[in-house]
Amino acid sequence: MSDIAQTRLLLVDDEPALREPLAEYLSRQGFVVTEATSAADARTILRDETPDLVLLDIMMPGEDGISLCRHLVEARSIPTIFLTARGEATDRIVGLEIGADDYVVKPFEPRELVARIRSVLRRATRGPAQPDEDEHFEFEGWRLDPLKRRLTDPEGASVAISSAEFRLLIAFLEHPRQVLDRDRLLDMVQGREAHLFDRAVDNQVSRLRRKIEVDSRNPQLVQTVWGGGYMFAADVRRVAP
Image 1 (cartoon, rainbow, N blue to C red):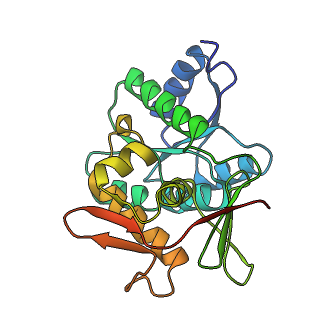
Image 2: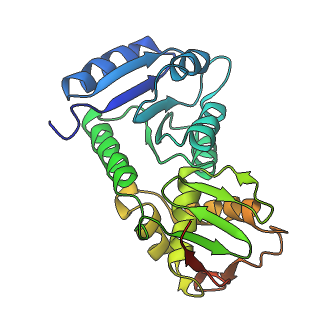
């Protein structure tokens, strides 16, 4: 298990009957597991350490998993997998919209969860194709530093961007003025092993538009190609920093 021996997981679930045996199982698989009983507990832990991945229950007393997930993906860029009940389909979709990497439905087979963890970590480690080390992307006054994952607007202000939005933007910037259908975007951004669905791409496009478009309801940069997918309709330059 050398590939995951140092992988640190934060398991956030208020149900000890699930959390404790799951933490023990994951520890036996070679992961280093920290347990949190609530979102508030998790935030306290996150002040002192940064896990490689968070396993996050949706329904918890106090702050729910959706709110904590938003913080994880936007402020911390930490890969996140939701642990959800069967009746929480809407919450799962919301979680994917805000940038969660995957979800598993309770009750689940622990071996499946381990496979999902490895899949998400491979994507996070591999990431999208990167430009040369010293290259930035520029488009319509915007600039993206891929190494620092820093996006700045035409006025020079930094714009927060989640891991999922970053991967999607990189895919578009690598293929400007090309029509990319949903299947290709899934391959490039999430990987087919992610078990996500086409609507997840549409949701992430909508979120990215709200970040970079003047009017997200009338997008000029990320354009919909009806029956085809999406096209990044701007000239893209690769420049030295």
